[in-house]
Length: 409
Image (spheres, rainbow, N blue to C red):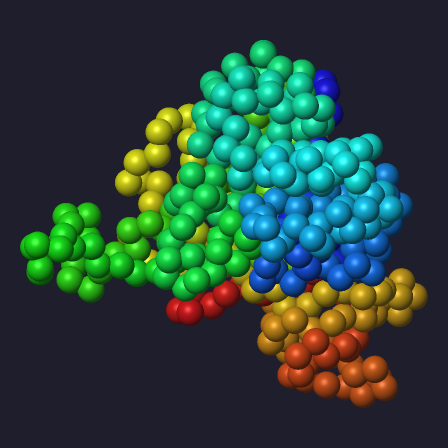
């Protein structure tokens, strides 16, 4: 069976490393300019070089987003940035604009190009257009069904990529004007304020006090608030559709999110590829996806047109069943002590779960903790405090410590 790529979000260098170590084949990231996630941290030039080198050291790939819709004032700095990315040996740039395409072909003609979902490719003819221009991949619009994707696959030879997990945008593949209108932050230049997640009252101008029927009560509704996409139950259909890459959304999400989602999809893809006749979706995979911060899940447009069942009108809040509390920096097999960086409240007596790349999760109770001078401590109260604790079994570097969120929280 042809290998399919699992593509992970990387909002910063730590997330990049975590995603790749937990099973991603490639990552997509952005520099400080020209990407559509201006508030995700992103990469300095030195971090970008390091990230690409780290990916290549694992024989994996790194793609860089240059997918804003630029205005004239954005263009002067673009050629030098493209040359920089080419010199860094990035595996491709992800773009949406023909003007950006033209500049790339002028200053770095051998740099591979992927066409962003922002370009709204919804039919085989538009994909064929990009194929004829020489790009190597098209990221399909989120609004396509699985049947649409199969039809496109039959008509083109270019690589096809599609989103399979993460937040959905109320606007057509992200082309939203609401942020610009309400906050003067241009969503198509990387500064989206996500007003689709705000609470609204909808009323017609000449009928004050008469509310649109979808509203739950007089306090308003999150009328534009979509559920999150999750296609884990449909791995066989995705692979057999002819897609080349399955993409996870979430450059602004946590390292816990990136590691957990990628580990689950990695296990599911490998399980199907290695034994398709006996493949089934494991309950533990679905349980893992409840542990991260997420909204209720939907299959999006893949199997039918979306309805009110794919929206959440009552709240825009996230839900999760576990908190990320610590990251393993190193482990000493002789003393069975792990050096850990605190990420949330952690103390002696807590029952925790340990998730690590390529290995099953396990649980234990924290029986003792020590500072770096080997003094016994009862908790690690300071943000990102480094401490040591004894583990009941060997753990890998970059293993993650989690604790269950109390039911009454």
